[in-house]
Image (cartoon, helix red, strand yellow):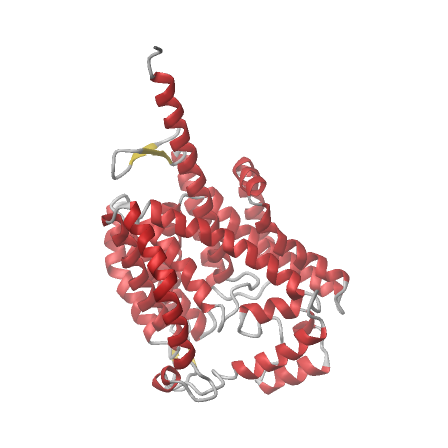
Length: 428
C-alpha cells in the first residue's frame, strides 16, 4: 500500500511505499557521496552504471512517463553523442559523451525516483558523510592565504561546493516540519558547519552562494504568506524592475576591464584567476565551428598543440578534469549552437516548472529546489555546470526533474479530486 501523508492544509499526497521511500533515499546518498569524493579508478563508472541500471529497472515506469512528456530534456545528451561522428577524436568523444549522458541520466533518475523531500534528505546525508570524512582526513591544499581544507574532494572549489550544499540542504531540512526530528536536529548542528567551510576555502563563489541561497530560500518560503494573486504580482514586479536593475548593477560591478568593485573587494584580479584567458581561447574555437562545435571533449583530450600549450600554461598535463569555466562557452566549443540551444530549451522547461512549483506551492522543499536551481543558473557565467560525474550536473538535473514531476503529480491529484467532486454531485 502507498503511504499517504497529510499536507499543511489537509491535503494528502502519495509519497510511495515505505520500501520505495528507503530505496530512493539510499540511491540519492550513494550518488552524491560518490560524486563529491574524487576517486580516479575505473571501478567508479562501472559501479555507477550497475547501480543506476538497477534503479532504472525498479523505476522504469516512472522514468518512461517523464521522458514521454519531457523529450526536450534528452536533446542535449543526444547531440553530445552525435558529436562523435565529426569529432577529431571520435572514440574519445563517444567514450566521454556516454559518461556525460550517464551523469545527466542519473540526475533525471534522482528526480524521478525520489520525492523532493527525499532528494533533500539524501543530499544532506551525503554531504554530512563527505564533510565528516574530509575533516577526519585532514587533507589540505594550497591557496593564496595558505593551506585550506580539501578533504576527500580533491580541490578547494569542490570542498566549497560541499559546504554550500550541506548548508543549503541543512536549512531546508530545518524548516521542514515533515522531516524526521533526528534529521532536523542534525541539520541544526551541520548547517553552520557547511557555511563555515564554504566561507573558509579561500574561494569567493561558495561564500557568496551561501548568502544568496539563504536570501533566496527565505524569500521563496515567505510566499506562503501571500495570496496567489500577490505572488504573481511580485513576479511581474521582479521581471519588470528588479531583474533589469540587477543585470545593470552586476555588469558595472564586475567590469573586468575596469577592475570592478566586487572583484577588488574579493581580492580577485581582472582575469578571474585566468578565466578570461580561457574564454579568449574558447571564442577562437567557437568561431572556427560555430554550428556543430568540435566534438565533445575533443579539444581538451585531442592532444592538439593549442590544448597542450594551454594546459602547460596552467601547470597541467591531463585535460580530463579541465574546462573553460563557463557553461555556455564549454557547450559551444564541444557541440556548437545546436548543443547550446538544446541545453537552453531543457533549462527553460525546468525553470518554468521550478518557478511554477514554488509560486503555487511554497514549501521548504520547493523553496530549496528553486533556490538551488537559480543558483546554478547564476553560476553559469563563471563555472561549467555540465561536467562528467559532477555533483553540479546531477543536482541541476535532479532539481529540474523533481520540480517537473512534483508539478505533474500535484496537477494529476487535483484533476482526480475535481473529477471525484463532479461524480459525487447529485443528478437533477
